[in-house]
Length: 282
Image (cartoon, rainbow, N blue to C red; front, side, top):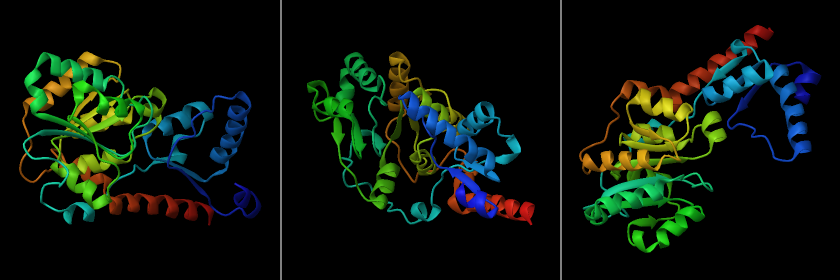
């Protein structure tokens, strides 16, 4: 903002994440006071999802032609070079639900309550289903992993390198997204969502309405259910397991839709924005 004001050179402001309103009034006011001149002074504003672009347009009056949505995405080479063998830490013979990355506090919603209800309804599934959390778990996940009813079922694996994570995604039978926060679901999409889409396995997104729900539906990739609807989550779990373990080389149902999120194609959209502000300022 300072360089733009002093030098007048073209400036693109890119928001990889939203600025969530802080709880303290003074901090909230001061951040909003800083955000407004950034949005109004920049020659172009990029967001990674439509929800945040709508927020800037409606709350700050930023014209739509100044806003560009360039989603996060995936690196195609990560998948073309992926190991076709089964992941080493996913035991064979089970239906594997897998979540990758950090689980933020409270984001899993009623998932584990729904899983418990499913097991009570169909006890035989205890011997068929495994839930893997690959990354950093919150306290809810830790408690589930230590719960006697989930003994040996909910498994914590810690962080693994990216290549191993891609192999595990492709080896899983259903990929989990936990986005149980209304404001986050409205304004953001977890970066792993795009790798999930490319991995080609069914996705179960526990999330409120927002861009993630739209992505799941448009890609025909699986289920998107409200975090506080235990019965809906239970039904989605039941539906997923009923399809049985996935086999063969995974591929997205709507590959042409998913391929728009390749990083090399997204780079082209970024180039268009940069070329536009340079030509406008010349």
